[in-house]
Every structure is written in C-alpha cells, then in structure tokens.
Image (spheres, rainbow, N blue to C red):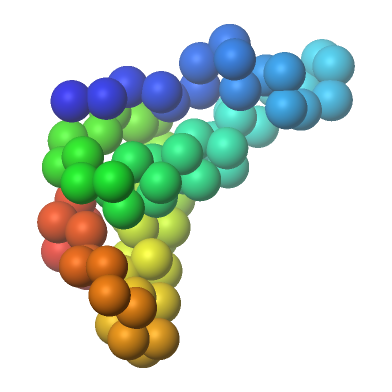
Length: 76
C-alpha cells in the first residue's frame, strides 16, 4: 500500500496558501503513475477522482495498444 494522498510534498507544486483539497489533482496523477508501476493498493482521500484518473489510464492503454498491461488498481 502506498499513501501519497494530500502529502505536504504535493503542496510545493501549488500556489502558496492553496487549500489542502487542491492536492487532490497531484494525488491523482501520482496514483496513476503508481498504478502503472503495478501498485495495487493506493490510499487516497478523494476516491472518485482517483478512480477516474486510473480508469483513464486503463482506457488509454487499451486504445493506444501500448505494451503496458492495464493496471489492476481500478476495475472501471
């Protein structure tokens, strides 16, 4: 299990004073990269955004015939 959701390191990517919830997009990006790397348990705060991001990866992989296997972290 990997838990990068809303971590302080993600705040460095955002404007100073951004709300903690603004870290959800960078969290979703990292979650996609982790899923692509084969991680199958990812702890997040915003499950829906992460599911959409990982489902997007899976659809992209299938449609572009990339040699990577679809990630198993999301069954959508």
